Image 1 (cartoon, rainbow over the protein chains, first blue to last red):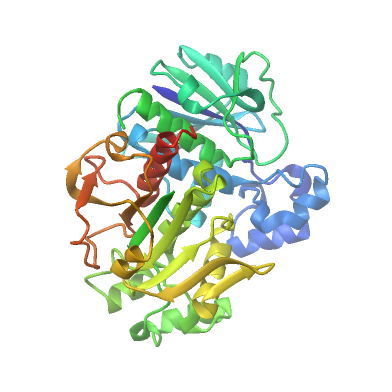
Image 2 (image 1 turned 120 degrees about the vertical axis):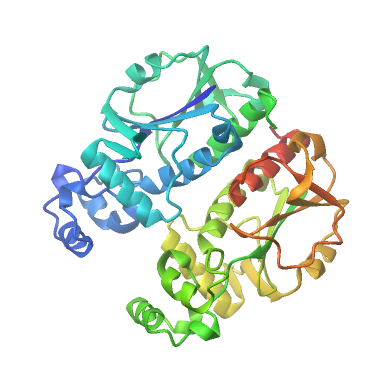
Length: 222
Length: 222
């Protein structure tokens, strides 16, 4: 089994400080949503994010990269073969568990709607089966709750190695940063195996693809 | 080099038969676009597609899967290393060449806007560099215009093989169907090497990921 843990993902509902912002309130009215139930999305709220979080505006509110990541992981051969588990840990220490049977809506707007539902209800089911669930947990507690033989952190400052050189067919947990800029917020000092797979910046879904494809190969699927 | 050719992609502007449809016209007005310059998108126009193309309504108007595919291919290590060329051939025998330097907009709406621009202007440049270009061409003519040592068609009825068993480090062209349902419209009978990589249906971006990751491995990148 491969456990993919996305750490410190920039996925959150509108922070309290921003809820009175006129442009955010207009946006909520247009969408017929309560302000505090909308997901922060820099694609549409960049100016407001800049106003309230000037030093973090480049990284906050990036549900789009989580959407792209989950379109990849859930549709992979590894997931079809029930050998992949994906967890999204957020900047606010919330953890979303994605069931292997879950397929993401192909439309981004519907993906946002689904995750807004999840933030409100904490669980999404279909015919009695849990598709998505959300709980409070630190990154370290999440990792310690998962049975695995190896724990690997992908980090630009890790040892430069090709994925084929460090991915084996053991029960492996791999941590990938869920943000497009900057560093981890959570403590990751307890993870000893640290690698960088490429000398340029990669998107998180490209990194996840590399992990998934190389793990499939390591266990003989591809 | 790996050449990925997406064949018979369900990517087109609003077909003539649909341009007088009231709901399509309302949609165009809301977007402040000319009807004939909008991209057909079943996420928003499903009912109308059903009315005008009842037998094809399940496959037509799928720019969303091309968007997801290009987010994968353009951000891959193989593309960063300038070893990937991606071509999108459409159901109407139009061919879009995507430059390796092109990165897709992360927002789906902006992606649609970019491709609407492309359909109108036939070329998208940035600082004098061509990012996207469009021409009229059949699938066979496109393939014959590309220098390659091997031509492979991925097809559910091809020989079942793992990607690692058929991908080598030669100059390879791989054809993937650019639709979510049904069969190729274009003639593909001239392609002799045909493989299926999995016994269940996969999305086109999952198939592309497998090709890219296995080619990276074959040439020693990962």
